[in-house]
Amino acid sequence: MASTYGAARVLVASNRGPVSYTVGEDGSLDAKRGGGGLVSGLSAIGSDADALWVCSALSDGDREAVRRGVGADGVRMLDIPADVHADAYNGIANSVLWFVHHMLYQTPLEPVFDAEFRRQWASYEAYNRAFAEALAEEAAQGAAVVVQDYHLTLVPGMLRELRPDLRIGHFSHTPWAPPEYFRMLPDDVAGQVLRGMLGADRLGFLTERWAEAFTACAERFAGGLGGTRVGVHGLGADADFLRARSHEPDVEERMAALRQEIGEGRRTVVRVDRTELSKNIVRGLLAYRRLLETHAEWRERVVHVAFAYPSRQDLAVYRDYTAEVQRVADEINAEYGTPGWTPVVLHVKDDFARSLAAYRLADVALVNPIRDGMNLVAKEVPVVSDAGCALVLSREAGAHEELGEDAITVNPYDVTGTATALHEALSMRPEERAERSKRLAAAATALPPAQWFVDQLDALRG
Ligand code: G6P
View (cartoon, rainbow, N blue to C red):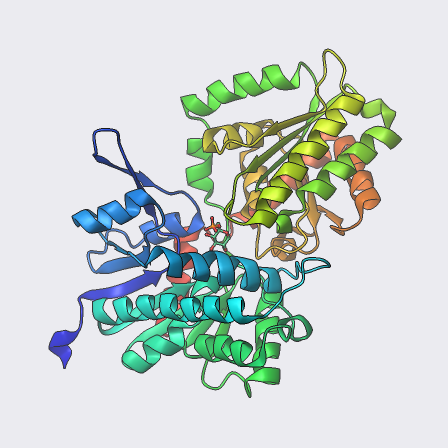
């Protein structure tokens, strides 16, 4: 039997992997390494020859790479049929599970669990099975497997059946819905999700709150946790990487360009997000408009630097949201702008170096999600900002559990309250701001990505 086992001793599984490919005009494949906590976390064991990352082929370039047998070391991409992937990723993971855990449903955006949903659910099962089978094939006897996120909730249970010898972990980067909301899912589907997760030896969450919500769901709908352990690992910002990267020449260049756009001597309120409903960008803009309306002293003296990068554009509700963000920003500029002052500087083209430039220039960081597993921007800006920043932070972001004391807390639905918080943040004395920012940065970097990953593995093996 043992001879059929693979060689990998540490495996990660996630929908989005650490590398993506594009096909050049001459047909050559160009690989681009992704950023983000998970990628830098895994690079901690990257030198480990027997580590393997299993992920989906997402682009045409990725699929071409699989077809040609090209690949990065330590990465195996699964070429799931495009329609199965679209159903699983767009249909189930991003339109249903993401909405449930972020409690984003509201009229008229309520779920309809009809025949189309059932068809998509079958794809979600097939997609999860493809991962479970690949992991079963690649994993050495007794290996540790850490499955990531809501795309792959069924994998632990499926893998347990195929390979009872493995140590299986699952980590959620999202919140978990409380039972009253989770029960919105059809009973059999909810049961499958919970049993799938409970196939793991250990489940990881970003905060106590999400871990408790999962446990409550397991108790109410699945007879309890059984033998599954639950733990919390609050992924932090990577201070060394961010500080070094944010002083490279391309970032300095973008700082100069941004300074031009902002104008001499003005304060900045900075936000950087995927254009994502849960990030609550529109209410953030409305709060900024309210600030300009009620505190005329800030007109001409502040600029809202808002970077809203495209995300999940296959879904109509994301496209609509993207258009609304643009529309509200334009409205504010039309209403308050003057020949020498653009109140909102909105950029939508993804540019990491420019994000870092904005972080460095931030006087105030605005992070106001409706719900967020953690929110790394809240942790990154205080680390990078040159003069220290004040943080206006939603109490519904996981990061609030660690940063709440030195942030200015807002209820994300409360637009006037958020406007008041922005005024308070902009008015903070420089010494207080610098001190708070220092404490925020210390709390934000307590568990850097590499350590976060190693802690999970140790807990799984222990
Ligand atoms: C969240 C999820 C991740 C996901 C990321 C970007 O942070 O927890 O799993 O990769 O959003 O979303 P995308 O759909 O572009 O992968």
